[in-house]
Length: 273
Image 1: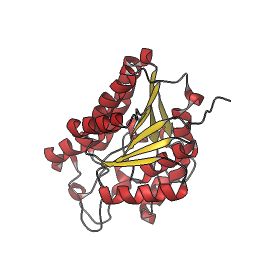
Image 2: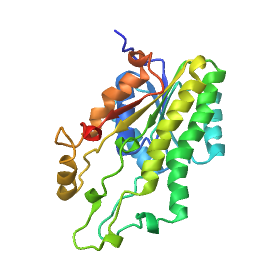
Image 3: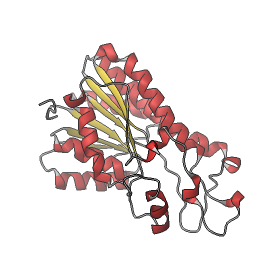
């Protein structure tokens, strides 16, 4: 059996307090890995840590509030972990900004209105942050000859364009309709490109790098949105958040020991149509 437990592993997860981040943590805790939770939101991070400790009382869990867009903060984290003899051998780059329409407030997501500050901020978190984390902790894995795994969380929008009709609001003129912003597609496609680059860069150091591209995850979205999206999915439904646990376990264990540089798309078949 190729799937091995991770009871000697330390897994570092960015965006650990988010919806998928907590599921990634649970997936690794199920196999016995110790967890290092990273998030910039200290309150939500504390809640996620408490929830995981309650569900996995035997799991060693450390939590750090870190801005992954700051290389200095990431290096401080690495140094703090080294002082207590912790060298992560699994890194999941999950942190991202997902712009949404909130209540009656429509964010300026349209390309013609999208400002440079939003572009820079969203890319700094979703793409630059993943680069910094990979640079610091991937280099550490290579220097200490730790056989490691890096998983970049992309999206089905890394391989297809967003269908902007999903976000349309009845009664609004075209130039005021919200859209999935360009940054989301650029970031997710960029993560797949980074995955391929790093997979060959560190292959001889025993570090495997793959991407996971989830499809739409149900999280109390409006019935109108869900109905429109489900029509685009051959399986006829959105994913449950916990349906990606098996993929994370596969990518982080010997079950995928001959896989690197790949992008696994799990989207109910949406990208096939």
